[in-house]
Length: 245
Ligand code: BTN
Image (cartoon, rainbow, N blue to C red; front, side, top):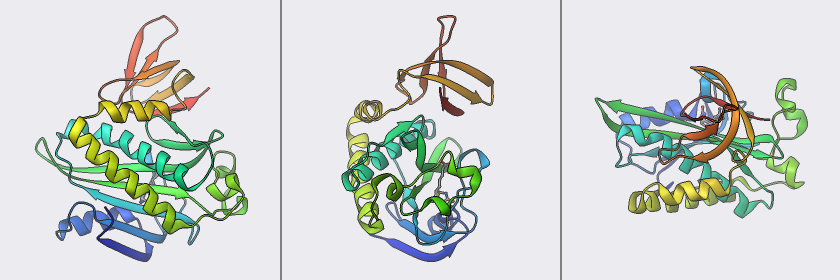
């Protein structure tokens, strides 16, 4: 992964550029990096704060050999790759919040956005966008983010080498991706659970189907979050926003 590399000073979004490059014939493993994004995208239609020089904004092109409805598993795989890749470079405890936010001390340091392109029921490709707050300082955050976001530099007290970090995340990604194709989701699920901040916690979930609160108990075999409701019933969450209580 990353042997075909496209680096840009400014992009609206590395996701958009990756879609264009795939359309132009770029293969799996192609990586798009920007120093800054003017319209960085987040999950749920949000934007991703992407100031110049201090963050990692990158998108990896994947052409996995899986049916379309398996893509949530790759979202979780990406979270494990970031979690392990970051912790090999920076000695800080990073936790995964379902499905794929990375937190330090409850504050977000990294997010993942997977966009798929499907024709009929066949998955053609995925662009896996990853944003990491690396060397941002408290003043780099707009007021509304200060409470909820932090960076690797703030948490570790030192400047982090972005190239080293990217290489480390890609190495993990590639290993996990190979493992996934050989052995399926089970080992990825185990690794995700090991890095999870969600399991065992009371969570509030806002989804397209409404709000609920319960205890997150497990990850199911498809990557859904299994939640025990106050009335003792179990439910599974496949999309939505989780708040740790
Ligand atoms: C989220 O947590 O909401 C997901 C954030 C994903 C941000 C990354 S930065 C690189 C790539 N390009 C984008 O426009 N978004 C993703």
